[in-house]
Length: 137
Image (tube, rainbow, N blue to C red; front, side, top):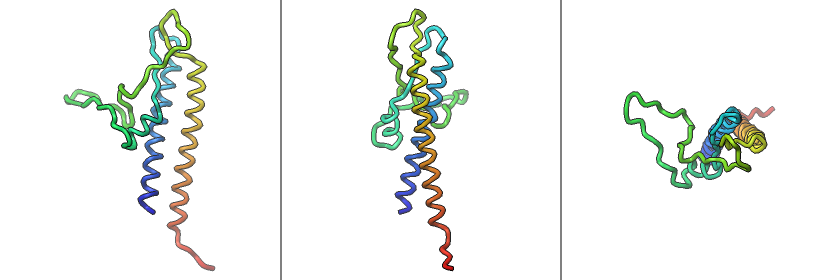
């Protein structure tokens, strides 16, 4: 029972981390909507989650080989996991940000992020309730 709960919580935590990373990418796309030549990025969430859960072979990440190298932030995806968004129409400035797509992705990802948080909160509350001593009155 405890292993199932732990596995479920770990899976949801990985999903939450990936949702946060995707939100960061979408926000970056929106922030650079007017930047000439900017290439919008996104992730294949289901593939990234399968890689995080160990169901697929993940792309090798870059290693920090020198003391001066910066480590990527926790939960950050390797560049090989980030995809370039295909533009719906061409722009003269070569910017591939489609604000309608980005807004829709942002809202969709926000709703799913909040749903994952609610699931985690519910699972933790249930586990805590199960640990409380039973008081027969």
